[in-house]
Length: 232
Image (tube, rainbow, N blue to C red; front, side, top):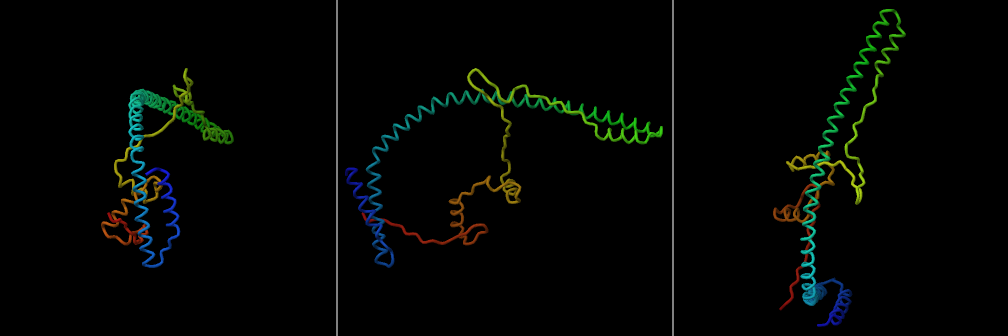
């Protein structure tokens, strides 16, 4: 069979089927026969394209395998060096945070020292009867503030290289250790439902196998389908 003949048969069959209306037993049988005929046409279409598809697939698969082999070698090395870069950047950030915490502690200590100094001066002023001066000193003590020194990362956020640019981006890694605990937090509204995807096909199989007709959060409808098998 040539493609032209197959196309003509498809056009004729689909036009004929479009005119069918199922209203009684007789028209039901006509529609059922039409389904069986269409299934036969589908089979012939697949048989017609089977050999070209196989040849194209074998060629495509061979190309993909070669591509994956070549890319795989490069990606392995890329992953290796990227891991070294990530480890370096993570360690640099850890050291930066340690230094930042140290400077922050020193700043807080200096602020506390200054507050204590002003408080002591306020006490002395009060002892001398200088009430307004004492209140002024106490107000200064309450508002003591030393601007924090910010430790800059050793590696700039964006670095220009000889061949391009590289940007550092903070991220996290996660590992789920208790799926039930995660689901509980979703139920409690602590995690959005968008993070999970329910397999409707697996849920349907579960409902059918257990003969469930009612389930909270699920609408179960019974439908009657027809199965068609042509005579040999």
